[in-house]
Image (cartoon, rainbow, N blue to C red; front, side, top):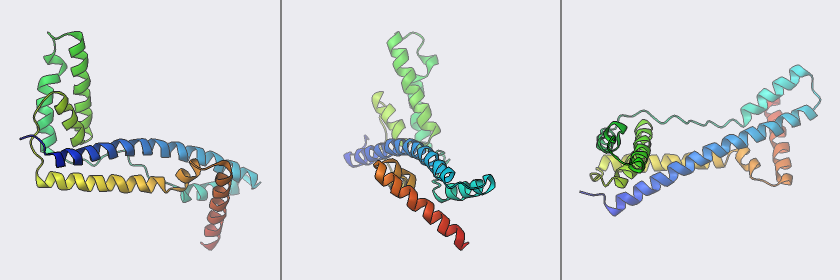
Amino acid sequence: MPLTKENEILLSENRFLFEQLSLVKETVKDAIFEFDKCLYEEVKKMQLSEEMEEKVTNILEGKQEVEINDAEEEKDNYQIRKIFKKIAIETHPDKLIAKSDFEIEFKASLFENAKKSLDNNDFCGIIEVAKKLNIEVEELNEQQVKEIKIKNQEMSHEIKKFKSSVAWVWFFSDEESRKNIMEKFVAKAKQDNFRT
């Protein structure tokens, strides 16, 4: 039985959030890098001893740290493996010997996408590949729907967390706002350090 429209929408939302989270993680890494460069410049302006400069820099870096976890949770998913096996039968390079160069390249690409989805426990990615090959996917069960909804909520939360980080806000601000954010950040870090 094919997927219901409701489940297709849920999977589409999952795919969108997955892609958005990947882009946000990439962007926040750039933001942190640029923020840190500016932070080091601010510390240099303080004209501290080398030892004190290192201490201050370490304190400040810890204040804006954002955890970026690229590793997906390891969770065995029978349904993903089952769909992957069907895809592998259609796309594995060993099965494509007598095919045209175009078909070999196309199916090899699909096989790589499916392998990546399997490795990342990406149910939606596996389904996308299966659809491109006209492989029928069973209807999602209640547990799968529940897990996908939870994963969607987790990804939404993670995206919001990254977008509310100091480095993110600073990165997307104009020059004047960047200066104000940096000054407040350094002042707050100094104040917190003197309290401890």
